[in-house]
Each structure stands twice: as structure tokens, then as C-alpha cells.
Image (cartoon, rainbow, N blue to C red; front, side, top):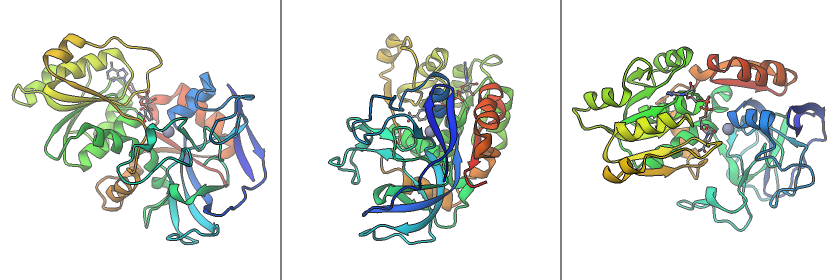
Length: 353
Ligand SMILES: NC(=O)c1ccc[n+]([C@@H]2O[C@H](COP(=O)([O-])OP(=O)(O)OC[C@H]3O[C@@H](n4cnc5c(N)ncnc54)[C@H](O)[C@@H]3O)[C@@H](O)[C@H]2O)c1
Ligand SMILES: [Zn+2]
């Protein structure tokens, strides 16, 4: 079968590899669509980061480069391994793409995303969505009912937004400010709107401001070059400030803006994965008793995220900006996202085309 394999930085090859083997407790899936993520781009340009380099196998998967890429995917079940229950051949599903130690409890309320050596399918080994087929442990397979398979490929990044929402402890009626409207900021905002919050977005790029407006994920979209975003948020909240802020840009001034824009006792969830250590305005944090929180991946967020989509609380089709074939991954996928990033939210790859 065809698969996109990461060998090294700027060295991704579309190759013919053997089909994965169905083992007890696993599920065989024909991949329908796989999204390209900012993390994949980082691997391509600056990696290997999550990908275990040649000679350094991942402690759980035991694999090293070359590995198959792609962690945001949907597909249809084609076979069930011995002992798999509660799933059916022909069912459409998404995969929660974790590689997590066998001894880790992944039950309700368990923070398995924080377990040692956590990595992701499509980065740390175990195949990936940028291939025709994949075999995954039953634990990570989530049925999607009648959610269209193309939209379903966005459930993984949407779950990142859902987990950020859960981490914020925000509730319906609260006011949120999202700093940065890239794919993660937009999808976080989509969850916040679906959960009944008022959402203000700060974004610089024209195309992304437009996307934030057209998708309806924001009540107002501000350009920090045109308005003092924190002042505007305070004005709109009767002088109080927002209940929660979400840092989705990895830009220090955005974190500063959120410190200013949230109310005393407010919460800021940092979603960004920073390439450097930013300065944090600790005096403001102390005087306003701000809770600054991290969020990574998701933990038992997929069922609730899928339900939001099934209930029509948000429309993922609006975030799909291109569809390409596997052979086009580098020139129409990665290169587009590097040179023409603003025009895109999610580029979907059809590994069978
Ligand atoms: N925590 C997690 O589990 C998790 C998962 C996936 C991605 N991430 C991280 O989330 C972050 C966002 O991802 P993305 O793919 O959306 O990135 P992105 O780079 O596409 O988006 C960032 C956005 O911030 C905007 N921006 C830059 N400066 C700004 C400013 N001064 N004011 C307002 N907006 C500004 C940019 O125009 C851009 O649209 C990244 O750091 C990524 O690594 C985290
Ligand atoms: Zn991703």
C-alpha cells in the first residue's frame, strides 16, 4: 500500500510498504481522509521532534525513522481482530492517535495524556493516516455515526480545542478571548461557541480574520494593529474583562494581551507549543490572581467532541480549504502551508486517490 514516510527533515517519501497486520485487540481501518497539521510541518522543516530519529527507537512503539506520518484521520473499519467488541466492520470511525504505555490507565478521569513517553500515532510510529490502511488498538477507535468522513478528519484538532475548553473550567455564558486564529485557535473558538460562550478573537492575518468571521466562531474579531484588544474586551464586558483567555499563537504580545484582557481571578489556557521560553508578566498574574494553565492533546475528549459535531453545534466543512492526493503531499500540501499558510485552515489528503 502507499504511505508517506518521514525519513528526515525535508525528506518525506511516498512509498509502497506492506499492509499492517491485524492482531488480537486491534481494528483494521481503510483511511478516508487525513489532515495536515502544524506539527507535521514542524517535523518537515525542523524535525525530527516527536518522530524518533534513526538509531533512537521510541520506548513504547520501538520504532524509529522512517515512520508513516498523519495523525488527523478518519476511515472505515474493514476487519476486527480477535476479542474486539462494540465495533463493526463497515463502521466509520476516527482514531485518537495516542501511543501510550500499556500499563497506563486510560479510563474516565485519567490523565493519560501526561503519561511518560506519550507520543502520537503518525509521529512516534504505529502507522499513520497518510497511508491507505492502518491497524489500531481498539481503545483508540471512536465511531462517528453519520458525520461525513472528510469533516471527521478534523475531529482530532477539534479535540485539542475541546480539551483546552475543559482545562479552562469555562461554562456557558462566560466570555472568552482567543489569541490567534490559526487552525487551533479557530477550532478552539468553534468549541467555545458550541458550548455557549461569547467569543472574541484577536488575529493579524486578513484571510484568517475573514475565516473567523465567515465560520461564525467569533462574536467579534479584532486586529491588534487597529484596536487595543484588551481595552475593547473590557469595554464589552462592562469593565470587568473576559472570564477566560486562550493563547493559540505562541507570540509573547498575545500572552500579554490576554493577561490584560481577562478579569481578576480569570483563567488563561496556553494551547501553544512554544519554540522558546517567553517572558511572562508575573506582576499582573500575581495582582490579578490569574490562573495560567497548560493543555496538551486530549484525554477522553473524543466522545464529547464527536457529539458536538453530530448534534450540529458546529460545522467542520467550513474549515476544509483544500483536498489533495497523497502524491501531492509535499508540493500541494506542505509547500502550500509553508508559503501560503494564511489561505488555509485544513488541507485534507486522500491516501487512496
Ligand atoms: N496543546 C496542544 O495539544 C496543541 C496541539 C496542536 C497544536 N498546538 C499548538 O497550537 C499553536 C497554534 O497552532 P496553529 O496550527 O493554529 O498555528 P498557526 O501558526 O497557524 O496560528 C497562529 C495564528 O496566530 C496569529 N498571530 C500571530 N501574531 C499575532 C498577534 N500579535 N495577534 C494576534 N494573532 C497573531 C497568526 O496570524 C496565526 O494565524 C501552535 O503553537 C501549535 O504548536 C498545541
Ligand atoms: Zn495535529
